[in-house]
Length: 152
Image (cartoon, rainbow, N blue to C red; front, top):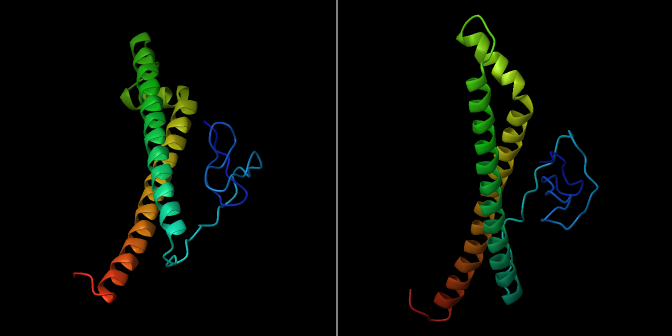
């Protein structure tokens, strides 16, 4: 799992070095502070914007599912490797020292887990933002219906 970020929007790049949000490829800046991308407060109601918002929600939901799968796989691999190391014996005078040695031996796996957790958190946020944008368009549509004499 890569910790590289898109130069354009700051989102994490996928396994192929691609940014799903802006189609930027490869050009990543690892370790740089990212700027938070804030959507416009209200998108104008058009058929195209409604379709785009729906497509974005579908894409964000698919990304959330993918990131949840990656997180589950990383956790499973970490748990399996941890169990194997514990079964083979971890050196240390006491439990705290053995736990620290285990953590050091699995440092790369814990880093992968951290990256997967960040990816899942970002995916959850993106789904929420997509819901908010789509709901905003739906509220505008409902307001137009009410103004044109539709039922309230």
